[in-house]
Length: 109
Image (cartoon, rainbow, N blue to C red; front, side, top):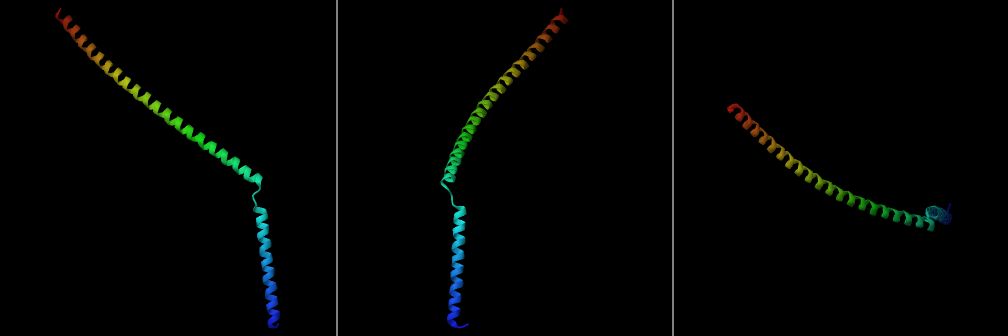
């Protein structure tokens, strides 16, 4: 094989390699192309995701408000319970004093 034949054979091999690469690129492009219907579907999915995120944020806000309300009610109930327990304790103390006074009056009389 002389020099000219070698150059021609190399050029043919390189051209065939280029054509195979171009064809492979065209095939990949053809199969991975995004159609307008797919873009529309992606837009719908993005809108649905956005709406779901808004709904989630609203639910979180509502739950935080409810938690604050319930915590406030719990604090009020605990304060009322403490006041009732203090009142009961005071009533028991007074009852004991009266019982002692009555027993003292009965023992003297």
